[in-house]
Amino acid sequence: MERITSFSVDHRLLKKGLYVSRIDGDLITYDIRMTQPNVEPAMNPQAAHTIEHIGATLLRNGPYKDQVIYFGPMGCMTGFYLIVRDLDLEVVKNIVKDVYEKIASWDQEIPGAKMEECGNYTYMDLQGARQAAQYFISSPWEHQYHLLEEK
Ligand SMILES: [Zn+2]
Image 1 (cartoon, protein in one colour):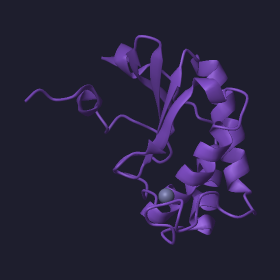
Image 2 (cartoon, helix red, strand yellow; image 1 turned 45 degrees about the vertical axis):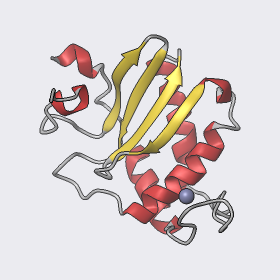
Image 3 (cartoon, protein in one colour; image 1 turned 90 degrees about the vertical axis):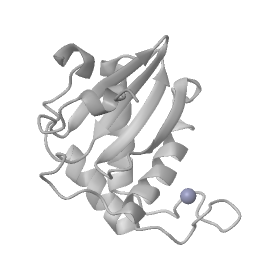
Image 4 (cartoon, protein in one colour; image 1 turned 120 degrees about the vertical axis):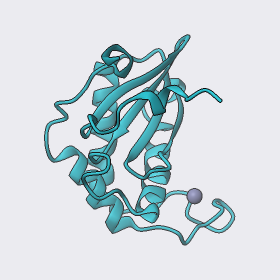
């Protein structure tokens, strides 16, 4: 089998940041890399699940809701994928900043965290989610570039 594109990026070189990782027509996949892979601690899955619920709710209620296709955690727990239709890096940077700032100070009920709304509704960690979001936005994301151009 062929090695898929996202495995072809040397993860030893990745820092925390926001990356364009795929372009498929007008669909753009951004990697929101929240911790440095294999160096810094990854998120705990409950925190990631909580970020997914809050983040998806904010994105789907925000000004670009019609262009947000998907938001969900990477299996390695070092960040999130954000798939959008036709939004460039500068716009997405502001969207991500806004959403993560709101997650970092979230003090409301976790959206969608009821038994009828989620497949594992008690599997949440709001404090961990807030900390992980705060960590991500606490220092400049100096590493923003097009992964495909690095190759
Ligand atoms: Zn859920």
